[in-house]
Length: 381
Image 1 (tube, rainbow, N blue to C red):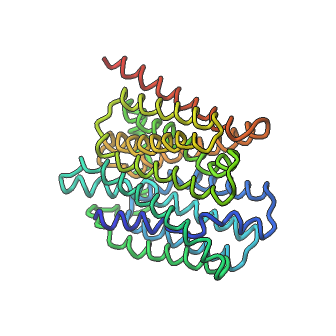
Image 2 (cartoon, rainbow, N blue to C red):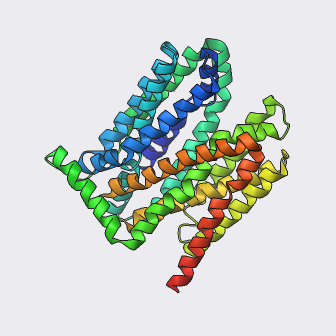
Image 3 (cartoon, rainbow, N blue to C red):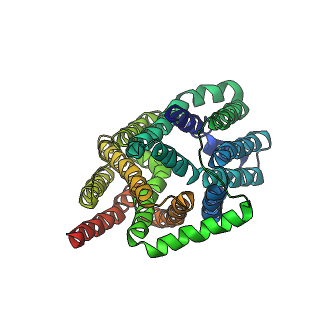
């Protein structure tokens, strides 16, 4: 199963459109506000579909959803390059958001339960860490050929390569093992799964805390990732050097994923130290405003990536056998909502200051989360 998972994660992010789709939007004539509205459409789609899709994954085959997700993205990417317009882009982002909702929760639940079935649930942190690393390696691998392919065949060639990667990902998803019974009545099973998952959150305090920890760790740095190129350019480097400095950030995040297995046993205090250290590195690196200091920003992203995997591990370990995808999607919903808030807050800060200040202030939520984790660890003692 692990080979299938790593291949799926790689193909899912080996999308040559990633580093150039903003150029496609701009060349089509979209304004900055129109491009921003597309990101909002993307996020809102995830908010609306996240929990229902998680409940559906608990009622039907999770493998089926992992197959359908990349197919939706393939259709969206094809629309972008074949009939480029604002509404085609908007529909593509709706399909992309739906894909994220279908896969989110279903993938984590399938992997954890299959490992548990084999008596190897302790491998979950290491397995998912490597899976996230494979996705980041794919992003870096797609960045290199995107420029030459764009120069050779334009956006149609870049889009065709991206569609092929999505189709290959869907085909590979059919190889995921799945040993679980699904509800005979899918509609009734969907409702039962949703009620059971939400009821478990209300009853279990530790589970509730684990659900809240996921967006607290994931949302801010996940949103900052979209603005990292602007932070890099603000340090005064040339446009040609921006991608190379971004590779440093992605490499650090990849390393953070690979350390997940070794750091799985970090308690609340250890996770607080990790978040606090990463927050300090982010603030110091962004405030310095120099290319060399971006190494601290990269170190921070590595810490946040590690904390993201560990937060997911804590959540999966606290979920009972039923409602796993539903509860994971509830955490994903929290992440989506908080991410939208971060986008809005970031824009408000940048209109008055600069990107370095916005990144520096973004460390504050992590310091608060670290403080709350420390206080909770003391309460337990």
